[in-house]
Image (cartoon, rainbow, N blue to C red; front, side, top):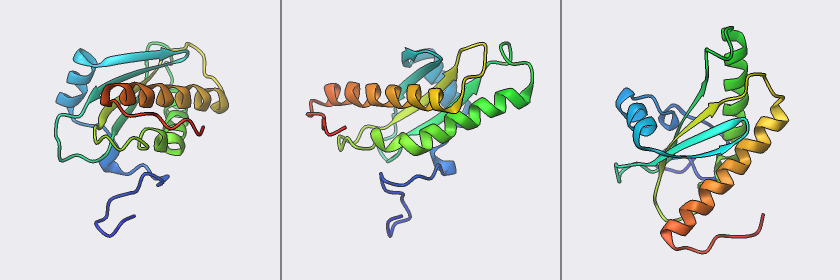
Length: 144
């Protein structure tokens, strides 16, 4: 944490302010957002409209139609949140100053192990970061 109470890009926390919760924001994201798909995850994203916001906000969802039991849905959401928490620094590497609303949607009909979910989520974040770098016109760091 910095002196102002903001987390740094190297922080492995997932505080409440980084969770996408507003109904209007979520509806806007699913209605007008762009997306990437990498089995089993769909990433919907939209640029943050408020210039004062200095962090990405994320949401994780699993279909009730595919997983009737809340226990399974919650397990998959926990796996996605943990993978995001560990790898969100990928999208904080660009100093361009644009932040996003993100929605990770689990689309498979069977639960996959954490390792697979983590790998796919990490690839989605890398793709989002490279897309962001193209838009902002900055060269992307190829150290990974």
